[in-house]
Length: 176
Image (cartoon, rainbow, N blue to C red; front, side):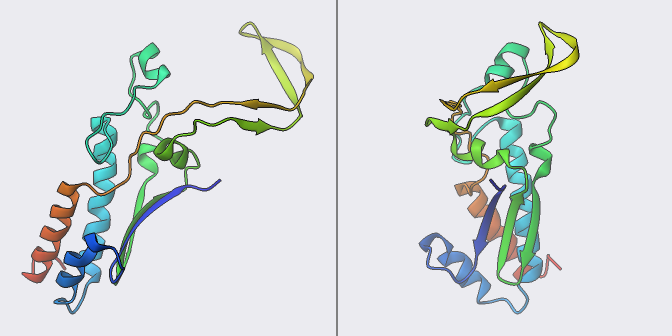
């Protein structure tokens, strides 16, 4: 399993990108704009963590841990939230993370999954360490992780407006 990447590519067939393509066609140098867009998109993802909402404004379902401990969903230590980084080129802006949990939380995981037979190493029992590890054979089985989707990456209508505003700023000489 890999991390997660969101990439805006100029010159694509996506109708939503037509306004961006028209704006880009008026630019000699697109890289400063693409860098600003990529930085903005990372900030947008972090904002989604702060607001506990998907890019479309839908609130995330609180996690069991957050309910029990009074914490924040997907932000126990902030490792996932802080793992997002930006990249840009002349014709693209992207946000990605190498955190393998990101795709699971973005899309959810609700179906039964097979688990192969394996040996489990047990080092504690009832909260107390054992003198020596115990090894237990576990037969093949299925599990249902029951993780609901909590989308953190995406482009909202407000994001689209900001991306266009950044392009207009660039055309006016405000970005370098």
